[in-house]
Image (cartoon, rainbow, N blue to C red; front, side, top):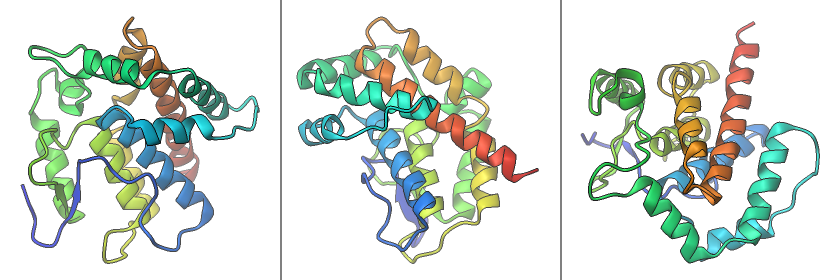
Length: 217
């Protein structure tokens, strides 16, 4: 589906939010969504792995900070080819991949079912669409994180979505199933680096879920 004038989602999102003036917290949220989306779409290239390895961490007891620290340390000790092999073993297969990170599968038990149709309707309301030529469906967890980035940072024309719309999208399309998917990644014996990616993604999305709940009180 392609909408006239729509913002596109679904292929190696940038590692920073759109070039708009954002409050610091929203900028950080958009950047973290971008990073999670990028790591789940495809294995990191040499530059991204090096950037993660060179990052600093606070050494605090905050679960998100701890997960980030472990990911940074793993990046420092990881071989790029091994990380690529791991990604392919987990997510790419000529048959059935070990991990299928699609919302429709986790919510209905089948791919390309009603949850995907509902998602496409909601995306159209936000004038968002899958990028032409991208093989992954819109309910891939990476694509959903990329969508959250766009809702926070704004589209090309600068329109940002209100927090209530971000919350509605998150609670409808991400919240009900992301934890199960990331748990599945953690349990895979092939997942060395990506086990820590899943830990980091889970910690961040948990913070988002809690923040939305507090905002509703």
